[in-house]
Length: 146
Image (tube, rainbow, N blue to C red; front, side):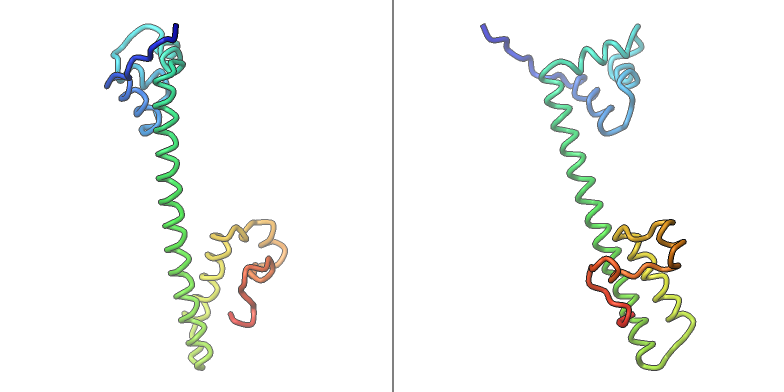
């Protein structure tokens, strides 16, 4: 005979959300949702072994991870676009003969930040050459254009 799963209660959902969304430890989440009880860690562990609660936990974790990734990619994309705009403007000023300290600093800082975004900025690489150019790893930027 197949065991029928009980639907997850609101308190149980709140318990899982406290762990996944609020970042509480299992025992803390259990106390928050079910009151001050003896052995909250073991009770929380037991509760998380139930199939219906585990499914909800996995579903909520996946949803939170997806949202975090979407926010991260969007932020990275916007940062990259803004830095390229600054870099392009500074390069145009320099090509037009308007070489100012701020134009040169804009180029240097933009390249440095883009290197960080693309994972090219490490203390080991900086110690080696001072500045890392993106064309060193073939991502489409050449030193001549900077």
